[in-house]
Length: 476
Image (tube, one colour):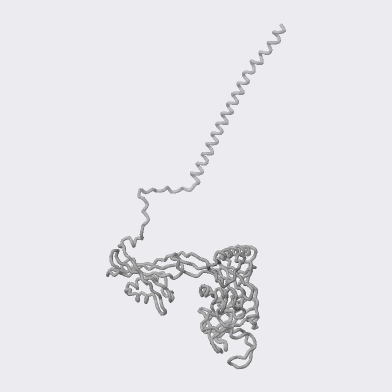
């Protein structure tokens, strides 16, 4: 009986647990279905919002219209040449001489005046023939039908071409009976380096010219050293000159133009002056010494090239007046017409006749300096009182105007309106490089030293020169 009483209550809870489990399972299933429906609805809402935004907010793009026709092929030749028969061509060269013109050159070549005028009219739309200088080379072309002889009656004037600038060729070519067109052709040039290492015997000019440098580049070289060296007084036989410079050549390996001086060194009386060319961030270039100081100074020592010092600063007996008085400047004897340069940047404050000085210019510079130039034969064009001039700009030409015994330049330097000896002034460099500029200079020195070592071989060095280690060129 006790057994029955103990087992009866245990069967009742098992019967009651089954409905509870079923309810829980049903609730869990409903929650899963609800979450699934919510996820689907949220995805559909996001997709719908994105589609609406793209449709309503995005700009309407035009639909491309496709054509059944293929794109036209690129023409093999220009339209005006397509209908012309094949022709053979030859050319003859001529050169403008003194008093010549392009029209006279064409007439000298036997070109019909009507055809020559038509060609020149076409050229004038692009280029003024009056700009051509003496020595300009011109190629004149003749054409005739293919297969015919060159001397056939069908041969005719086909045009001409010339090179007005090193990097450009102008071609005037025939397109019809009396029709001509002008074509501007770019000439790509390649740059090459040259190195000269020579001893000075008579002058820097003669030494540089004897080693192959062009006259214009030699003048630039002399100007470069004229800030530090007095060529009339300081130069000695046996001084040494080193120059690395460039030249530019065309596709036919012909010299097209002179380049630039990249490095120059002059050993004068045992002291070496060395300068490196450095490109500035604004595209300009300057020359600097090993300490990064600009080569250019406020004033040049000698404002005329190739001159001989004929009279010094100080008291002297005047060669014409016959009595002693102060000679306020230096006299440089030079051939009549030799260019005179502005010794520094400044403003012209006097220009015209000035008594015994003859034709006279005075320029005002910074720091209380002024320079004066006298006895000129004529002034440079477009100069007047108040004109701004640059250092090295031609301002006039040597002459013998005023009280002068012969052609020469009288050159004065004034400091606060008082004359000083041009040889005694020692103005500082115009500027010096900062840290970033010095780093660029060191890199340039390394590259230039490597270039010089590559060029300075036994084959292109003068046998009379002493052997040196050029790997340390920037440190000397």
